[in-house]
Amino acid sequence: MAKKRKVEAQCSSCGGTGVYQGFAEPKGVGVVCLNCDGSGKEFIMYRPFITRKRRRYIKTVRLSQGNFIATGAGPSGGSVTYEQFLAGKMPKR
Image (cartoon, rainbow, N blue to C red; front, top):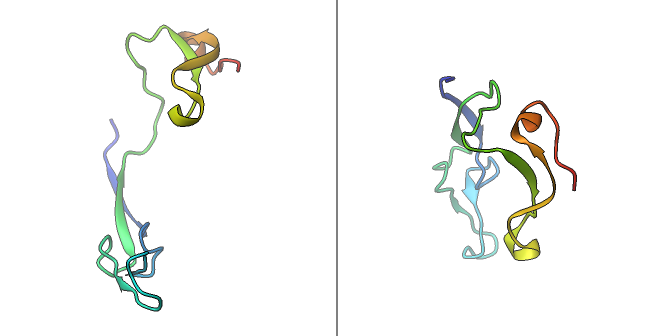
């Protein structure tokens, strides 16, 4: 397994400004961003992708219906075997 890496990234809360302005702040007023403590940056931990991992007990792969609220939940469309999926074949809609 690859070792986790740490990188600096633009703060996702304040967009790198160090100052946050949301619905609670009056017009023209900003507050020091709580996510980055005003630095404008945050650290992201990740593992580099090497190869797709295998899942045990999967025999068939199908597409998802998507968002539960909009379309329901569960599989839809055609299917492929798990081995076909690992070889690059995708199920049809």
